[in-house]
Amino acid sequence: MLKRLPLIPTLLVLIAVGIMIRLGFWQLDRMGQKEAQIASYAAASRLDAVVADPDFAKLDEALIYRRVSFTCPKVSGWRSTAGRNAQNREGIIQVARCDWTGADGTARAVEVEAGWSNNPAAPGWTGGAVTGVYVAGGVLGYKVVADPPLAGLAAIAAPDPNDLPNNHWSYAIQWFLFALVALVIYGIALRKRLAVKGAEG
Image 1 (cartoon, one colour):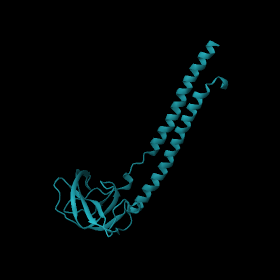
Image 2 (cartoon, helix red, strand yellow):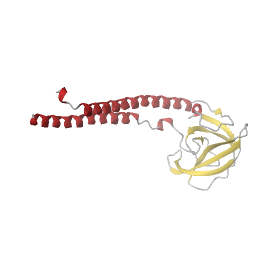
Image 3 (cartoon, one colour):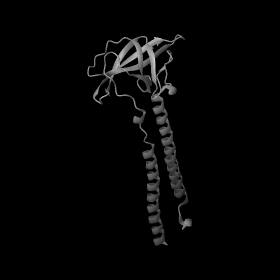
Image 4 (cartoon, helix red, strand yellow):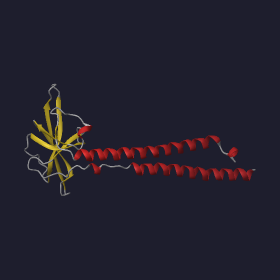
């Protein structure tokens, strides 16, 4: 029977199935890495607040989900985005952009989610002391979610690392199913081919 198998199609199917299975196990590895990352962020969120480098202006992995405090020298602008408050109500998150010149003379900036409101108008806060949670996101790739809120705004729902998506298990199952389906379909096609060959013989 092995001699009757079409060599090239069979090899191509087996290679494709092998790749799918490998991708499935890669997703399982990624799932473990993501779980470790979330656990690390959760541990960071329980640490005391640290004073951030006044010249920080990039995504700092060591600070993600850590409470930080710093001074916003000047608010150069506001934007608003949809979000939830601490009571899980939908509304508007007011985001301030703090700009300043670093010690090396280069421009620095950080976004601060100052708080939640039903009013889309920009608050009157012009800068000052900020304490909050440092997370990835926003226009700059990183931001600080103020806690306590600023400018008389309401508290925003606290960032929770456990809310980060970890879909790698479902992706792994999908790849394994793709491999199984490919084998079943090829098996059916092969069976029909061999049946025809047998009838002709």
